Image 1 (cartoon, rainbow over the protein chains, first blue to last red):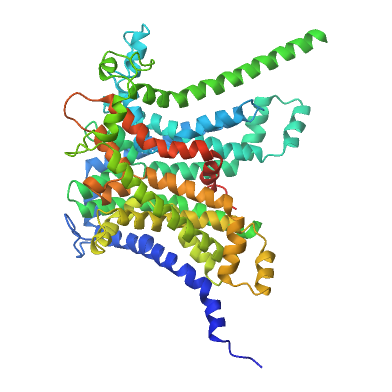
Image 2 (image 1 turned 90 degrees about the horizontal axis):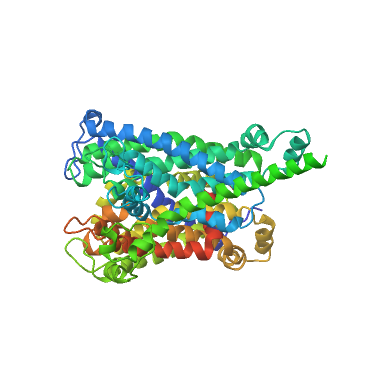
Length: 298
Length: 292
């Protein structure tokens, strides 16, 4: 007695798929096809305009033979290592301090987090001014009587990258704080009570019981901050513009200047693919584990 | 006993003082740049070159704000930030509405109308949240050129909508998962169709996440620099690109007060949203980290 479905019924069956189709198409084209396209350009001899020939890995050889790229990669490592360590340390400290039944917790949290609402260009502009060796912080300290105090890192090739770390930590540590605080609030109070009855001191309880329980929060923070540091572009551009010289070049600024300033589209595409592979190596396992837990857990 | 109790109370008080001291010190660190920006923007240039950095202005003037808004030079055009601020508004409003609307529909389909492969589609969309945009700007520039949209505001709206869908879909999917399926099933039995259920059951329940999505998208798109600088030039730039150009003017005596006023102008819309709806902003931030 199987009746054929009417046309309207069949349309209703397909409607959800139809609704999703434009987004899927947009993402397949805008993300996956475009990645493949960039990959293709990275294997071509493109300079000023895209060429669709095939020269193998020549652009990648050229990329890795460029000293500026080596500077960029080294800077990315220095930046990420410091940025992650300091941001996590400061964020965790703020979260733990805020978790001690603090008065005006809401106001303090808002103060720690507002930099996240700002554009990196605004942050960069502000910090560039603060770190100005002639008129900024250095002058204030000099004025207080410490005449020999020098803080001109932003103009020193060997130190400029650290000034970008300072600004980036300022911008992002509130974010780490928010995630850690959410993690702390999820911990059962009875665990802490029990440890207190056993006679453990508060710092001890944090170090050996609570912080280990924050593992998922740590994972999220590490992954998201790594992503922020690879993507970091606006902040460098606003603070140092990759300089002095090419001292603060990072992969994202390298890619941008290769394509838009130096007419080396092929090298730029190759550097973009290197960035993408780094991000994918971090993000794909993370998303996979999150989705898998989702399916198993709930 | 009494002495012991007293010393315990004292050490507890010292501990509390250290906690508050640390919290207030940190608050100072976070507020300092904002303070410096505001006071610098309200000083005359001579006072700044005279060495006043962190102090309150001796002469209070809004001249730098007026200059940044309507006279500062971006390249050769001395129009101030005003037209670029308008560009950003014309870009951000349609892009936020489009990406939030589409994300709501997607989240609805992915939770209440699952079909074979819908999880895979969600995975494909999810990776888009973490795409380093450098990997797509070259083809995107080509395609925008072919569509006749390069260097235009509609072009930027398109780009921000496409890449915004990933995040908005994540928001709505994780929110709609918590709405019991029985609710939509019952409505279906009563004869309500796909869109009827969406508009009269899902959307009214989704108000908080709609706010989260709008705020997140507004902040992201307003603050974007990479797409703006890659796909526009001159008059069609968004305000972040114009701000960077104002600051990097190399001619003449550097007008730090105008720079800071310009930075404040570019920051005010997102700061305003943060102050008014900070709670929802935090939820958007943590949504990328905490799965629903």
